[in-house]
Every structure is written in structure tokens, then in C-alpha cells.
Amino acid sequence: MDRSMNRQTRFRRLLPALPLLAAAVLLSACSHNRDDLEEWVAQARAQRGAALEPLPVLRTFEPYEYDAFHLRDPFTIWDDEDVRTSAAAGPRPDPGRRKEPLEAFPRDALAMVGTIGMVGDMYGVVKAPDGIVYRVRSDNYLGQSEGRIVGIYEDRIELVELIPNGVGGWIEQPARIPLESQ
Image 1 (cartoon, rainbow, N blue to C red):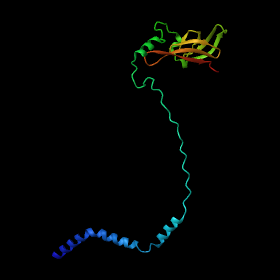
Image 2 (image 1 turned 180 degrees about the vertical axis):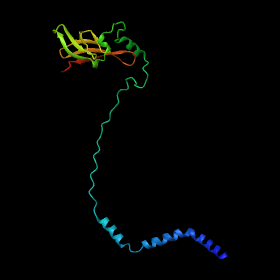
Image 3 (image 1 turned 135 degrees about the vertical axis):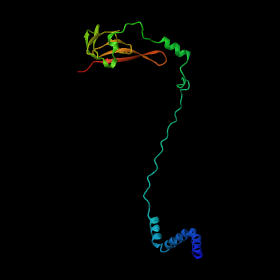
Image 4 (image 1 turned 90 degrees about the horizontal axis):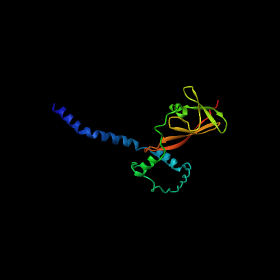
């Protein structure tokens, strides 16, 4: 039993050195006859590489000078007294005005189908989404944005709408309804 124990102890001592011994054997096998490898490396170095494309020309950009420092900062809250007074002074919808039937529909849902009258006294013919045909003239209202008719022509109806400007006021915006092509 002493002898078997002695063998196990020797084997345990040699166990850490076993990977080093295996690596030494493998490396010694690779050191013989490297002539073909050296020849291949020499041939690869002798070959000329492919021509490289020229580097792209870098575009030069003209610097832009920001010159809007005198304008209002877009990231501040609109709490200026000037903004409030200008909003109150601009155009406003008339809350006491009686709504007309075509104001129940959005402007883009209305279709101009023709005109009636002569150049001095022209009426527009407008068809609503519900199928009813209406006769309109200048200063009538239509659409849901307080659109007031300012001109009736053979091919279009021109109007001015009141659109909220976002700070409590209103701005006038031109719009038109073209003659519906059949």
C-alpha cells in the first residue's frame, strides 16, 4: 500500500508539468522543415498590391453666421405684455353673429359646383356633404374656421378664415374652394 501511495504522490507532482511537456512536444514538431512556409512568405511579399483609389477631395463649407440674436427666444414662454395687447387688437370672431348652415361643415368637405348671375352680381353654388346645394354670395360664411367669402369667380370661391395664432389671438388666412371638375 505504501508503494501505490508513493506512485500517486509522484503522479500528482508531475500533473501540473504535463501540459508544459505536451506543448514542448508540439512545438518541436513544428520547427522542422519550414522551407515551404518561408518560400510562400517571400512570394507574397514580392507580389505588388492592387492600386489604391485616390482619396476623395474634401468639400469645404462656407461658415454660416447666425444673425437672429435680436429675435425672440423660441424657448421662452410668451408672457410679454406686448403679445397680449397685440392678440387683443387683432381680428376676432364675432360671438354674437348667427351661424350660417354651411359653417357646420369643414371647408374641404364643401364643393363648388357652379355660379349663377352676371359679373357684377355673382352667386356661387356650393354642394354640402349631406347632398344639399346652397347658393352663396360675398360676405356669407362657410367652413368651420369662420370663413368669410370675399370673392366669387367662375372657377373658384375665395374666402378669408380666422385661425387661432396660439397666443390668444387670431390671424386671417386666405383660402379657396375650386370649381369641382366633372
